[in-house]
Length: 171
Image 1 (tube, rainbow, N blue to C red):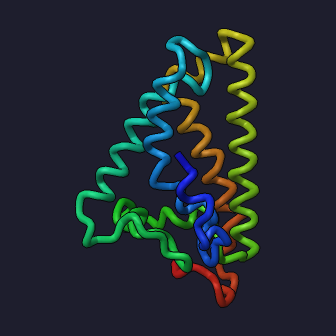
Image 2 (image 1 turned 60 degrees about the vertical axis):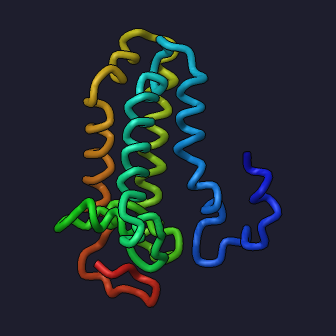
């Protein structure tokens, strides 16, 4: 499926992540992965259908009005879809920038790496014990992980009052 884009002359990335040409395939790959997994698997596998439905709903929302350009990335600030969905709250502050390279973006990235490591650790534990697998049967774990990410991002990673650099996002 990726053969047509392997020879693309813009793989170097420029101001955008190099895998940007594969992003339109993500919903299709997610559905294919979800269908290919056997039912009853523990851990993260329990979330395959809700995450696939959420991803598909987001793609349909972004594609519903092409004139709004919700599928386009803006390298110097949060994407249009986050701006549209978040209204008064700047969701982009909770996500690292791939192009700004500011020290606060590095700290936000470290927070998300720690949260991802905690999620993968819980998933590994769910493969061994029924008790750990119960964490994946409700929205409790994802909500807890979001709070665990947001608190250090607000308190440590995104420093208020710091002078923005030339590539800083517009907040």
